[in-house]
Structure formats: structure tokens, C-alpha cells
Image (cartoon, rainbow, N blue to C red):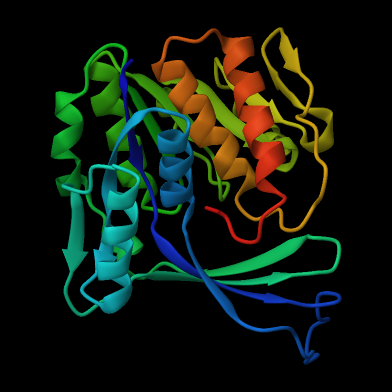
Length: 270
């Protein structure tokens, strides 16, 4: 099995349940405030670790109590935190999440230390090798993601890019990925930007996922409690399966099954 190295964000998620999402200018009373560990990068790393991969992480937290707690959290999953930097005087990233009665969410992210990840933090990627996987999402600098993809590809590692939140990366960077993972909305934005990566995996919600000629149905969902992090769960599980040498369709099925299970829990990582 290869190693999965995740480049991405680490956030503390503060979640409040509401009957419905407020309209502009409207104030609603919600339920109790619940805090969870989140951030697309960390969510994906935890999913990959729980799927059996050996996982390392490249990113940043603040020099605050939330940063201390996050490093302890990842260590519990045997995720290598050696290359998670501490940024003095800056808060660990934070996300404010509202979840309505149907389980749909809205999210506002304050990047904090995530915005301080630089290309200087990428030296560990030079130890990647064929069979390893770099998994990156876009809650850190696009310049950093692009350089990470180039380094990993040069080492012979597999690059998996999750274009979330959506942003247009250079064509040469997108073509390093196998695959680029997008949902339906992000896939439409790719088309609108005139981008056509060589390898694209599209997640289709309840209709499953499609990667080239491979189409896999969604996993069985029994209860929808909170959809936060379902896409991250998919990506992390997919990366773990690819690092284990699993074929594309089987990797998609593993990812779909995990993502379907994840919506039965409040918060991204539980």
C-alpha cells in the first residue's frame, strides 16, 4: 500500500441546527452550538486513515488551543502531523455551519492559518514515490496546490485534486491529476471556464458517481442527519483505495459506500 499525503485545511467547525436557513437580513433562533473538527483537508485525511491508509498531512494551524487540540486529534488516527506548521499570532481556521431540518448546510469559512500555507511547506512531498497518492483540495492557496501537484507528479506519485471550493487551476496542473474530483456544479464551472482535464470524476449525489466509462451507484443511505463532509469522506476513501492499488470502479464503490454512511452523523469527521 502506498502512502496518502493530504494537502489542505484544518478548521474547527461550529454547527447550529435551524428549521430553515435565514433569508438575507433575517435572524433565526437555532439549536445548541456544537463544535467539531473539520476543514476539507483534515476531513479527507481522517477518512483515508479510517479506510486503512497510512496518512501524512501538510498544512498549518495557529499557535492557539484549537491548534493544540487538532494535532492531538489527528495523532489519535495515526496521521503523521510532523509537517503541520504552527503560525504565531494567527488563529486556527474556523467554519460556521448552519444545518436545516432536511440536513442541508450552509458554511462560512475563516481560513486563519490555512491561508499561511506556502510553497515552502511542500518539501515533504519530495519524498513521495510511485504508488503514493497526493490528495489536495482548494482551501489553501492555489499557487501552493499547483506546485504540490507538480512536485508529486515529478516523483511519480498519483495526484488527486478535489476542486472544492471551486477555482480554476492551470490546464497543465489539472492534467497531472488522475482524477480531478468535482461535483455536478463544479463540473459545470469547469465547462464554463473551458477546462477539460484528462481525468475527471464527477460525484452525482443520490445518482452515484462517474469517472470516464465507469459509473457507480450511490451507497445506500438510511438516515440523513448532516451532509457536511460527505464529499470529503468520498475523496479520502477514494485516495486510500487508490493507494492500495484498487481499480477505479472498486475505489469509487468504496468511496460511495463511505460517503453514504457519513451523512448519518452530525459533523464531518464523526
